[in-house]
Length: 113
Image (cartoon, rainbow, N blue to C red; front, side, top):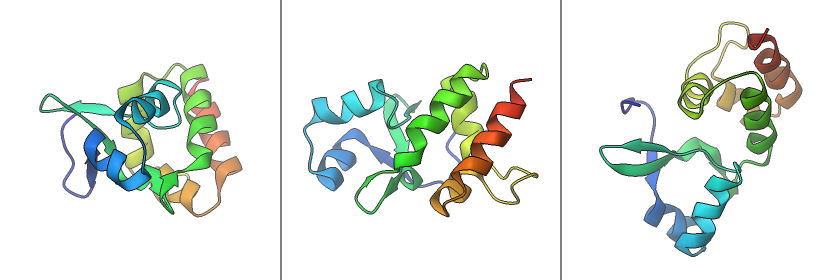
């Protein structure tokens, strides 16, 4: 994935500092799909928008499961979450942050059909 100018990216060390976790714990969050990372210039990075109030956005994990069930790869999921979706009027991650979880997941489900 190419780095988008309007997306702030956090490295694993950034996340360990921000979340107060060990590197292995941050990697576990990624493995468990509580966070989604992309390798950019050889470094694993997570969009800063996935962290809200000093924690991974709780609604992200379930949304990633829905996207995976709809046939999305991790890169496709990242792209969809970060770019404006016409039916939502904003990016899905912005809609999730605004509490529109059900709407985001309905749109994600519809994409798989």
